[in-house]
Image (cartoon, one colour):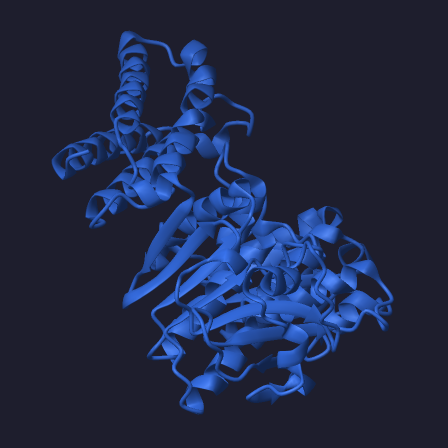
Length: 455
């Protein structure tokens, strides 16, 4: 699609958002019930703003970004639903004409996007992402068998249980032996960089297109007491450990230009991609920033649907403007809803922007992908720690994802109770703020002040 066409579409969506803003600014929405149809005008205005922003970023890119087409189309899918409550309540010919023109603009945009043919490598399951502010650096997603790749890599990374390298057929370790004749077990006995005490090592130089094999081994299957501990440990530490290993290799003068790895944690650990994204993406950015020679990180998976999903998530992350990202993510159990929103208001009163569900999730958006994007963008996660929140699988995954992404973690313990094994592990090196002796009405303000002092 020509850049001029994209810019024209951007202008039309921005004009629609401006029209809606002028209408809503003249309406006493604050005095209307939450379920009043007029509130749909605000949600419709926000959707138009997001579409204008997506089109602006797409037109500014040197080539059509991977996944951008799907993001724009998904955003537009919610428009008829947002318009529906207004069709019967927004009286007058002018209102009817505006809604009709908006749906016509949706059809026009959809038709133009349908003509876009993505590059051949994208169509074949390969997505390349240039990184803002990091010239010449790329994340490449590839659907295929990493062990069979003929690409040249300075390091190929696998994962294993501690000191266990049996070449099972469904693992990368097994595929490396079958496809390349590379025995990870033999390499582990004489690594060039031996950091096994810290959960990683890097082999000596090899012949062939895989110069070295690296291994991340955080789990000891003989000492695992809880199934979720596997996922927690991988999500919390896998990509940080990988970054540490590659930084050590760079310090020792080992050339690190291109690396390849599977999606760590998405295999036998079964971690959902939405929670893997913040650690993966943020630690990759840190690797590029800290290792001058690193040019590309190639991520492989045999499943096309996971590569497509990963591409959509990364596209959304890159379309989130840094200036608009909230500073704090509020993690809480639904039983704390009223109190969590008091904390949210206290933070707003202190001038701190915060992300909270469900208010911060755009209407019609995918819940988990919005959580992933929010965690990646914030500076800190504050946890409202209660027996109910530590029993919540959602909360646990939010916390461990934020820890893996190297975010500041600020747990506020609202009542006295013992931590379970999972949270004791997650918060082992994090300061917990005890608030159970404080007056209930004063707690939101105290939490806001504590967060403000740490940002």
